[in-house]
Image 1 (tube, rainbow, N blue to C red):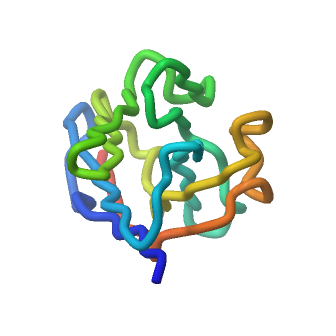
Image 2: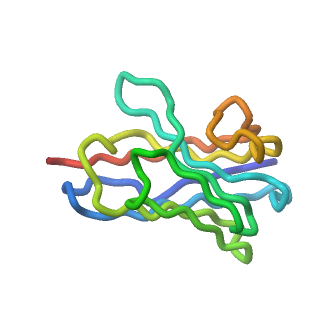
Length: 125
């Protein structure tokens, strides 16, 4: 059974930091692209960042460039999203995803095959 389990969400003040984790199990994801998406209240899901398991390629939404960093730990089968300088507009449910053909379309949610259940991030002003 394939599982992606997110953790690390919570409530933080503007300017603070959080690190999200996504633990994967159930299959080998070495050929997959791992992505983070988020869904703000009342809005559609949007791309945040993506990375290949080797870490040689990373992709970021313009809104998070320079503030968020995506990384992998192959030994732990875990993907991280380090979020710094958080803003109230970063408030959302954050989802981890894995996609095989997402290598070519890392920002498109439809190209991801597996999704986690999501973790809430709330940034207060």
